[in-house]
Image (cartoon, rainbow, N blue to C red; front, top):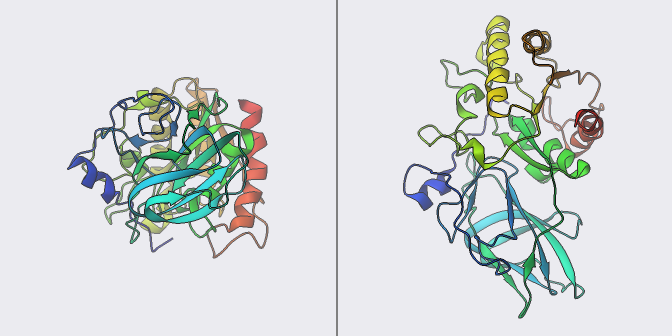
Length: 339
């Protein structure tokens, strides 16, 4: 992961004109499909300061809603790549601007559900991830999709962001695990991220995780009252070794990171994954043990040895679709057993 992806969420700055203030959304009438429609669930970290244009942060943020009628269209400002799933079907890729028709073949009349996930704006990709509303059939309305009562937050780097998988965050193990368990989920991840800030400039979760917009320096802090995670799954350390972080430093910073997350989410189950290539495995486990010794019994080390099949990588580090599915199949029961 030497060619790391910089999570420059430039689009959010364009909309807000500077610092990003992730305030609570201004609500519109339920059922009208506008960004403020209370029937639409915005999962993950979103900027909702502009009542007519909502912007997702980090990887894997998505919107979820029910709708009536036979067609649904997205109102977009400029060109963006996105994936949409209707009625629990496969995620289909769309690209465009203005009005994007998600149902080129009309659906059967009745009630339907929709999930939309935009491609993360990072590295050289500068698509316009701006949700401006839904357009439905005449007389159709939105409605609340079936309730999901739990939320899992996945924290990591390009692996957690789904880099090199076919549909990026959507085919990443975090998104898939959340969907498999029927829980809400979000991926707080950008390619190239470390746990530790380093002198050679590795973007690091020890400082960037707490920010609103994709880890960008100079943005406002994320308002953690916006959602409460029931579980936090951490997969960090793959990049730190390449930036010269010692084992002792990594262990100390991991312990502190777990401590600070616990302060934000007092009742969450925290899962620290062994990196899939085994870097800092002993140090990660020791950090978990330190938190357990401090009285936090809801922190767990997850040994991922052998999880990836021999043909589950697209290169020496990043899982392909088969690899992400294999991780999902092993990780989902681990989380489920604790929740």
